[in-house]
Length: 108
Image (cartoon, rainbow, N blue to C red; front, side, top):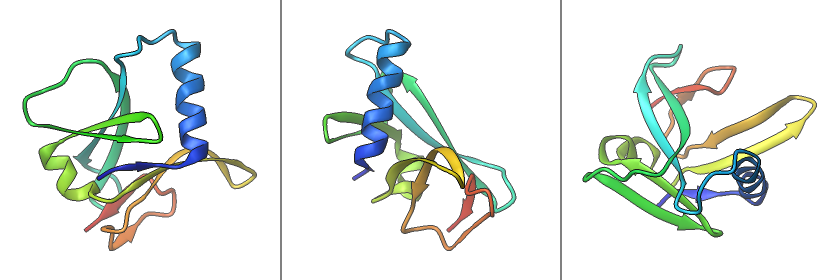
């Protein structure tokens, strides 16, 4: 399962409205090699499903990831912060054994 926080849900809905994305659009989460800890997250809006995609619905937000990425992000929560310490989306990943200082890469 993938989860979304209340703040992330609000921001996703705002972005989708501002960019006039269709109702069948969803958030695609992928994991790629790279970053200072070995793996990095990527998040985009998409509207095309692939055969190996895993689909999750939390708080009315559809999150999709490919099967390989799901192995790294299972039970992860997509968060959004807008405080003084930084603004933007980040992932609360219980599988990560190490993260970099910027929070954009991780290791398992």
